[in-house]
Image (cartoon, rainbow, N blue to C red; front, side):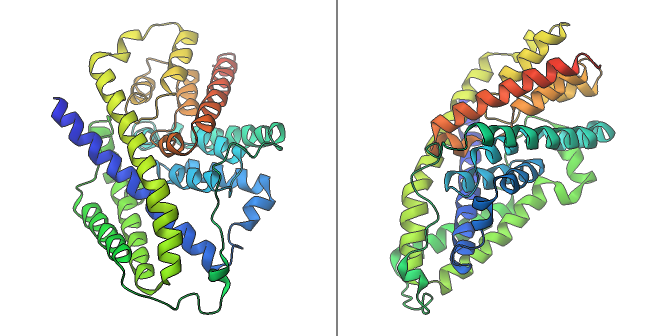
Length: 352
């Protein structure tokens, strides 16, 4: 049993780390090609950044969440935008909701988006002078990048070769399905994959495989400086080990605990206690434990306030990279999420 858990966690960790690294590389490319102008608007307009964060969070699954965390930790998005993403995101549970309660799912997602925007704007108003929650670096434009010939000076160094091989292997793993992770939703996720093809994990993986091919092209044409400084030293050396180690550590710890602890035994008929339970379970940065609340809601066992609290407080795997980059931001963001989840869930009790 532990060997199966270890292999599954290792596969999940490689997938999450690979997706985060590919997105970081794409952001580096966009930032360089636009001379830093592509993301400058996000820094100038906090409200616009909050909208972007909420929209990315609304994307089913964890992909939009990974992108938001990457932009936040590099000072492209504000803390409020991060909060908006985490509230709007329902992780992989979004797929199950669309399969089991499609009519309710659409307006629940719209409601989550509205709550996310309000919470994000309020958060930014209260923390507008606090920029220390980000990591120390940003997607910088170096003097070498500003030169007309920034694509010149290409040599097939061992770092470029290693990056190329790593991305190529990642593409192959995505294409063959070797990195597909278990969601804890059983047949529900397979059901949604057949009914909403463009939003299934298979299509998400294909999209990232295509982005990875773009990265391969960049590795062929980019200058030595870009490959060495931006891709290797900034992303591979600084970020990749931390993202992988924290992701693997958190997932293996959660996996071991859940094998000996059945959350379903806590279920009772008390709505407020269920809201509190759903909120606390939402702290777990994992897709799976939250699925029980979606299933119970679809079966008519728990009311809407419980599902809302669960959706608001949890964000699937999306916040895992944040644990690696900024533990303080993770704790503060989860605390705000829990407060909003309890407030919305309790308020919803008055209308349901």
